Image (cartoon, rainbow, N blue to C red; front, side, top):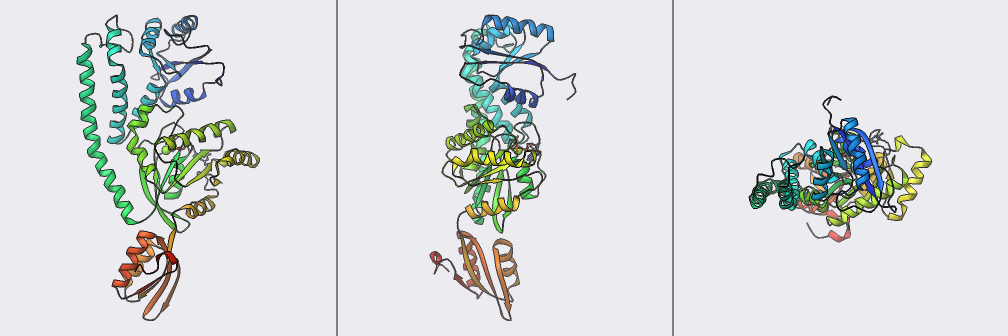
Length: 431
Ligand SMILES: Nc1nc2c(ncn2[C@@H]2O[C@H](COP(=O)(O)OP(=O)(O)OP(=O)(O)O)[C@@H](O)[C@H]2O)c(=O)[nH]1
Ligand SMILES: [Mg+2]
């Protein structure tokens, strides 16, 4: 987008004395949404019921809007509808809060029908919660952000939103049925399911691309990925389905968590989670973002999964800094592996650690008639073959696979006139 067409925004944050200062995250979000930030204001005080900030500060901002020809004011704080209305009246420009800003980014980045509908649903749920008050206020005189609402009867507007929500939900259910079927198909293939998780911009997609040899879009923008992609990946000889998905953010509006529930469900149904952490952040931010990610994993019901932490972007920091970051994360009791997804550093060690934490594999000694070439190549393509010996009529393999897959293959081998010995005692006699 050219500079001319970019909207000019003023950022505002009110905080309590106990809260840390700074507007970095809001600035990052505003840039990602395509705004040019022309001024920033912070105020330390209790929330004011009318404006959230104090009236004096609000007037100061109104001056700045005129002087800097700003198009919009973006608040870090969650605003009540009446505050948005009062501020818009005072400022003469539209006022939005962090939730609406995140929704704007999501709308901009949504590329699949499912993602688009999920975002519209979140937006409509927000509208529904505020519809009555918005219409009531608009009747008192329309302000930026409230245009067109004044002519509505409250219930007509409310019911129109409700009907649209019902219809989107029905479409989403149809789309989701497909993704559930895909997930079941992957399950039936027997490979474990591994999900990438972590704060937005941590490098999940970069790691996905490196492991799956893919070219999915990575970017410094926040929330680049909004839909899921799954590929079969080899983790040090152990194959697993790896899924890239949407990132987390602190104070992730509950509306968005709700709307993205099925996207996040990929994570809930996985056998292992890779939590990607940006090691180039400040140490305090690393801690904060990891705790936030673990909290979201808890909220969606995925806190009991085996978890491996990928401490990513180590190419950007010194070795001693890597050690400090490792130290910060040591209280978590999950394995932490420093990597650079971008440069491919330490990915072999990382894959071994993931493999070690995958559900236990079964080891089989398999004897197959050598003429069964198709079966032999099938075993090579789906199992992790540790050794192979060709001795005339029979070929003997020692190979590993997840339990269900191992059972299916063992049955196939026996049907073809071969034999199977379970090296792991737990499965003896299954074939
Ligand atoms: N220097 C360096 N940059 C990295 C590394 N991994 C990722 N990046 C960069 O970090 C930015 C974010 O990477 P993504 O892979 O898009 O991050 P993500 O976690 O998928 O982010 P969202 O999809 O937006 O939630 C991009 O500019 C990447 O090129 C790394 O190991 N080193
Ligand atoms: Mg991504």
